[in-house]
Length: 614
Ligand code: F6R
Image (cartoon, rainbow, N blue to C red):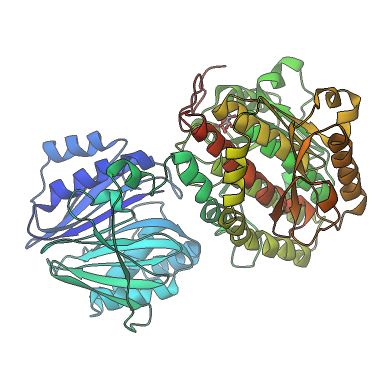
């Protein structure tokens, strides 16, 4: 996600801001910018690409240093990574500069309102809407803090906003909803940032801001209110992490941090998906609804973890749309001469958007006349650029090589796509779609519940640290979860692991089962009785042969208890959505086992984050 820094104090703000942006480079970004406020008003510089581009720009066209400023590294969500879309955004009247992290869900209607009033826009971002609204409020005579409270009340979605006023060289204001904001309290200087890594070299005294709060910051102090102006208190704390721990939010690995970011990441994937008429929308669609109605086959193409997300998607898409859906490994796709016509919809899934195998599949599919929808996490990357439509997962940069939040958000995005197609094709009623969406929106809190109970999984990893082989079994959507659990173990713990459809076991793999072999089993929710009972029988089959059964099962399901050596409880969810929960303990297990074995969980041997060769 975007990196945010604000500074007010005796130092030259330019260096403080650029140094802070460098400290947040680890988060991943595609453009950077700063704005300073001095006696002559706001001066800003922003550039697409790495920080070095911004530094070259500042060297070539210096701006006057000041004691107040804001800085930003952007991870593109709305609008490509470009100079114009980089932050800060300065309001058209020149009064306000603003930086933003998050997604403003209702930006389109707010923008239409401003455009109707004649406000000119310079970027394609949702963020500029907040800058323009703030500029308008301040021009009408509101203080910057009052203006930010008023604007924040009107915004929907997730945001951290930091703003400065051209007429005030001593104050910055910030607000937050569903997105992080922390205040750094120095000696005669203050900071606001998206994480403490940004200011840790200046101060270790921090204040965490609560939900829906605004903070007004000067060099000598800060004042916190809610969005209505009632005084509230931030939560002060002392930061005792070193810089490397601070970058990882206090976790030992980016992977672990990203596992813990999943409730927020999935919530962000689901944000802003409805238009004013409460109809689902995708991010960029260059395929007409009429064309989507003529589709007679869907082919999902992806690699690795993204392929497993596709396997989950097949169940949901076929169930909701009744259109046949195949899932294909991208590197196999074009070599088998797939049957693709103008009525085939190809869906690619890629976190990076640069995976060569998947890109080649996109090109092949389009050459054959198919329409291509990309599900992707990286705005402006090659695969979405070459596709007919895009659904971004908005998970924020994934730094750990093994995909975690990438997977969960891909699965969530696939559900959205399935529901979107059901809406367009009329295979589900609006209220049925709304019910499923409500369940989806309840999933982040349930994922958090799984994470809150992770100690049991950490202990289990310690207990199983000497294992040589681990098996994973599942049926229906539990099968791809089993595959993903096994892949995570192979990748980062370098352990032999296999995922199987639970029913397939007796056709061969059961020969692998021996005394004390750990076997994870994902049990479907009880509502699907046949499916559920079959899996319970499969647990008995492996247990009878000496396996140590580790059973992931929903709360309230007591039927499996006699056959489980270890029970990992999952919050209740419908069968199709259960992968969003069942995958999480398997990620935690792999990460912990890798750690205990002394491996680098973030950079496993032989693997690259983005595989740009076929
Ligand atoms: C596994 C993993 C890989 C990727 C695969 C596709 O943890 O990260 O299997 O999922 O290389 O990458 P993207 O999604 O970038 O196309």
